[in-house]
Image (cartoon, rainbow, N blue to C red; front, side, top):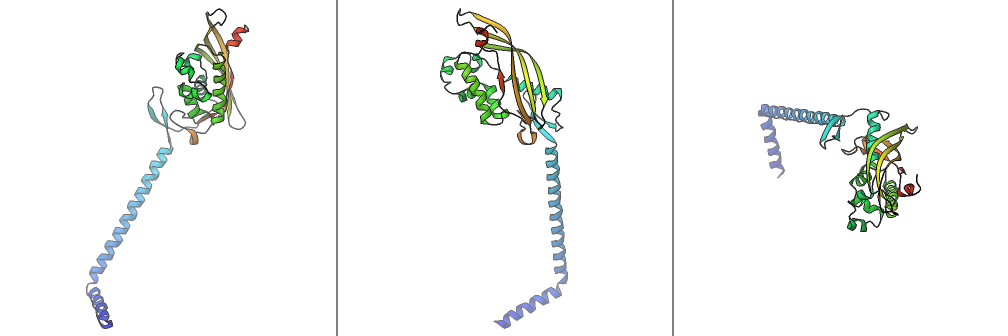
Length: 245
């Protein structure tokens, strides 16, 4: 057996000695293949890095007409008129009437409002605020409880129409901001004594405190990555009308 093994080794040595050109060509081919593989792998890495950098340079945002667009990222100046107006538009979603929270005074809808969280399934703006803008469930809960309480007490106007807004913006030392939006609102009440319709022009003040973190919270619905804590609501209610305020 040992003799056969020795003969096999000898034959292999003789083969490669006699066919040295074959071994050389094989080695060259292997080297070329390895170099080609490395170059292709390098190209893939460079291409991936370029795509990643391009993606990081852009943001996906929703345009006013509802389309999704890719725009270049820019430094957000939170003192700018554009940013302040954006916050004001979001705050306007925090203004609601009885009609809005009951699907147009639908009695079946109204009967299902047995806890604050039910309002999320009725008002689209409230649901958007919860999903995109409030920092946590605690902030959302305080906001919903306010409206739930006023709705059950019969304090909300029947219908509203926002006429104009004033903005009072203040940057904070911690990098956040505080903003009070004063809304001029036409409100329709029903006088509970005479049962007559009353139309009033009132002023509401909603104060929000928050911050922005686009890298963490930016979405097509919230491109700046804004997050609010529970807002301070100072609305004109039916009790104000009763008191003659």
